[in-house]
Amino acid sequence: MIRAFRIPFSTNVERVALALGHKGIDVDWVDVDPNDRTPVREASGQELVPVLEVDGQVVADSTAILEYLEKRHPDPPLYPLAPARRAEARIFVDWFNRVWKRPPNRLTDELAKERPDEALAGALAEELAGSRDLFEAMLCRRDYLLGDFTVADCASFPFLKYGLLWREEDDEPFHRILMQHLRFDDRYPRLEAWVRRVDQHARA
Ligand SMILES: N[C@@H](CCC(=O)N[C@@H](CS)C(=O)NCC(=O)O)C(=O)O
Image (spheres, protein in one colour):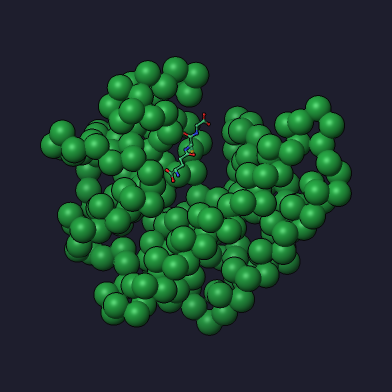
């Protein structure tokens, strides 16, 4: 049995929940108090979730976990089968992690300061909001970001969904930033339809 550690409203945990749901893999969730990461630290030597534990093997980091699941349970695939397409999917996820996530992360840090730099905050907010156009264009005449449902949807949905869906109890500052600056406001019909479509997918 697979064990996985999670905290409420975690975007990176939802990536893994979608991947497990897609592959029909059962998991034993371990709910961790966000203010006491002791079980996560004891299992993995670091404090971030998600963390997966399979037969004594521990995998941390959502992207590494998605790769691990694909390797161990290749059917049904979450990555395209053709090598070039597979590489494109990996490039997308890497871009999402290293480039797309940066403005909302930096904006969250900036706004937490006693005297935020207004110009910097404005530029970061603009960069984040501007990314909606890219996703809207990627969904032109296709249902998912790379055509079929893949790791690209899995990795980005938990973040992009905040343009349309949010829960009042979710008061994580990073998520509030996403809600505020990604709001679709009926101006991104393909992106909105995609969020509704992916939201129907199974989650473990
Ligand atoms: N690169 C890691 C990032 C994991 C991460 O940042 N997890 C968040 C939850 S989504 C977390 O545990 N944050 C710790 C905290 O907020 O104290 C991944 O992709 O899994």
